Amino acid sequence: MKSLTIKGSKRESVGKTATKALRNAGRVPCVLYGGGEPMHFSADERAFKNLVYTPETHTVVIELEDGSKHEAIMQDIQFHPVTDKILHVDFYRLFPDKEVTVTVPVKTTGVAPGIIKGGSLSLTMKKLKIKAIPANLPDAVVVDISKLDIGDKVYVSELRNDKFKLLHPDNVVVVQVKMSRAAMKAAQEAKAAAKE
Image 1 (cartoon, one colour):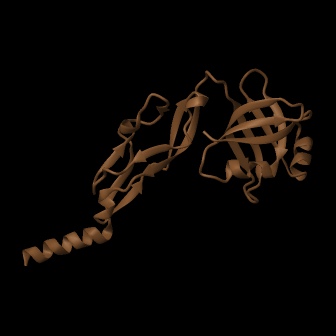
Image 2 (image 1 turned 60 degrees about the vertical axis):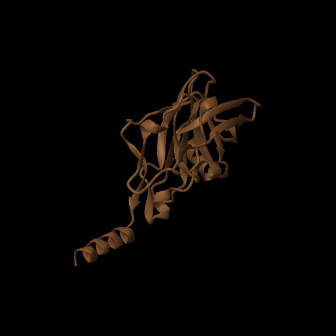
């Protein structure tokens, strides 16, 4: 999984006044959980651009002014209801031997024969929730669609593997090739013409 670095500085005071002053200075209050006491820090708002406004999932290296580095993953983010500015970010510390739950995008590979015949690809699940140790976290769950004909589906059960656990029931459809409206209309017209 790709990693981003966010440079931050520890926060001494965590009250409302201090938090407001931080936000006014273009900084985002953050908390790092996991491994003892929660650690409060702040980071420049621009540092979150590649972490938040992307469909991809990243691990994060939080670099503090004292030189310490903490590997983490973003757990939660709060936005202002009107301005959409980031108000607060929660991170969870990663440990090499401890499983973590993340949501990763679904990506397809190959060309489905069903699409060539006029079908349309439907990505029913754009993201999947997985659980794995940090070293096994994938950038995405890749689905091979090169054998899918019209009406074919790929279920969660077909994507199971040893590196990570998919936290969805086996019978959930991830990708399917549906008959497009145009192909359906052509089939109906052909059927009607055959009856005449």
